[in-house]
Image (cartoon, rainbow, N blue to C red; front, side, top):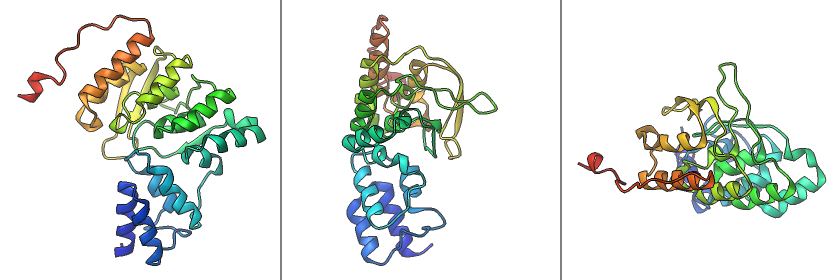
Length: 248
């Protein structure tokens, strides 16, 4: 791997548009594969979620980097107006199924709303919901019965709790907290890959305390409380957060 490629990979890892532009000025050609993979794939497959993601993607696209599925573009750019315009041209986008490698909750045979939920893109999600996207649409199920999750699953234990606001948006739109899936693989294909069984959004949120999920215990409990209230369920006292035993 060249020094320029390493510079690029660091830029997409930390979501730095400035570093990406520097790589381009130094001669990196993102219209061709970078270190054996499309430049945009390096960005979308990275585990960081932040407000800088759309800016990074925009830099790559403007430099000629290809996006494997153009239907994803307005959602990944979190461009609500572009989403509305795209759906106005083609209503089938609301039910279209897309594939995208995800470091966390899988995006296989997923809807655009699943994608918006995974990346915490609230403007895109709002536009999709206003256009009539099904809030409880289910992703694909593989031969082992893994999958079938709704967009809400992507929001309950997101990176740095980025999708907490989107979780509330989906709940306000009527998303079910009791939708059950037989199995779901977290980080499919990554070093932290873990398959869980018999899940609802609430039980999936609880799994954020596992070390491979690297989620904040306080965020996890706040999200579970929000989900319980949305379900009309009582929230018992949850005072031991962070857990005293684990801190000792």
